[in-house]
Length: 147
Length: 147
Image (cartoon, rainbow over all chains, first blue to last red):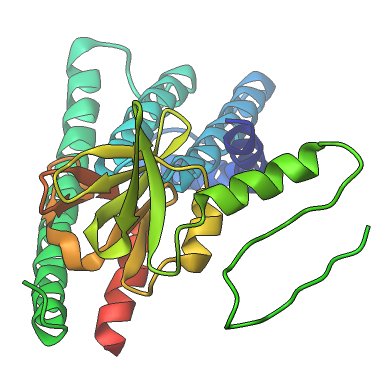
């Protein structure tokens, strides 16, 4: 557990510096695609802090993949849930997403579909790799005269 | 303290320790000598039973409740006195690591199973199953590809 926390903080701190850079990109996108042309000091500060925190969490969460006992899907699920909450909160705090049933549902739908696609891909890849390994195992057992 | 090793193929094998008083060292030597059963087997303990387990009759050696346990072909569990790391050095090459707590007899692996959680399990002929970590999965695959 100690090593996980250490790894979480290490990865989080490495990633959180990228947060403000991403924020700059988000602001540029908002400027080009919507009516956001001026920002208050408050908006900029909330943006920097929240995105730095989001990047810290997103970076730190990769440490979950280091836990050997956790199957990949479980790691992805935990990772996904934490990221979903973090992104949702960040979007709402910064007013990038309207607070309401419909916008949150659309956001959630896109997130879930993305994760389902990843899930299906990983399951198919694991099944294929396992089949290959079983074939190699049988060949090895046959060659060594195993019953 | 002096150490003397006499190699004499004509004498019975014995280990004698001449000390002033019993100590943790003598205890360790005693445990080591008592648990040594030859180059192709280990001693397993089960309730009041003590059994010489041939390596070929061991399906896997794993850690259950912080204790090192050998599972034989009937699925019976025997407590071992050695540590997993120590055993890894004396076990034949057909014992492969499938996760950080389990060494598997590859001749006794029935198949590898992809599980819905995205992980992979090794299923043994006695019915016991244990997870294969992602790192070990790649190592096993490389091992079979080389063979």
